[in-house]
View 1: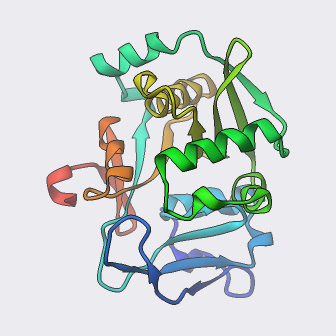
View 2 (view 1 turned 30 degrees about the vertical axis):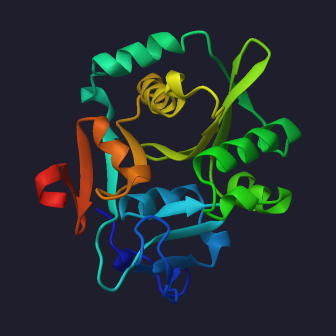
Length: 245
């Protein structure tokens, strides 16, 4: 298990941000521990950092470092042991006509239009619904590590775009946006199931899902993908919801 003491103070360093409003829990203040300089975060370094609970947003690599809250729990799916439940199997069948294509990580107006529709529908008022083209590029298209952009189409219709990082022992689900007018298709669930299958094809044991937050509707869904491991201190352990809530 990687700890921060494994990194040389003459190379990778860490700083803690000032407090800012929490994006997931109302009336709470958040802080982040940030890696600097970001140009030194290559595939090898990021593979170590993600095992220590860090995540990536554009070139920004961080993990929660809040003063009075530990609600953000890093989680990852045990790929070899995962068995989809009945609802998830229905979701796979419902979306079996989607065709996934690896695309070059460049700006495309069609992708950006879908992103704006998704944000306006699913996250209105959260700030990201106002992202301009430059903010979109910085958030999703900039990366210092191995990142895949996967496009999902049904015929000619763009349905979903997913950004996925490759790390030493798995894949990391960075961000996904999809057609908000198809709630019955459960595209977000389908995307995670698809990524689990991709991990299996690549022989990778884990799919990192970022942070589980029990009291956040946006983040609590991750518990549906069992078995999960969660990071407790410096060790990954089998997820127990009662202990984490």
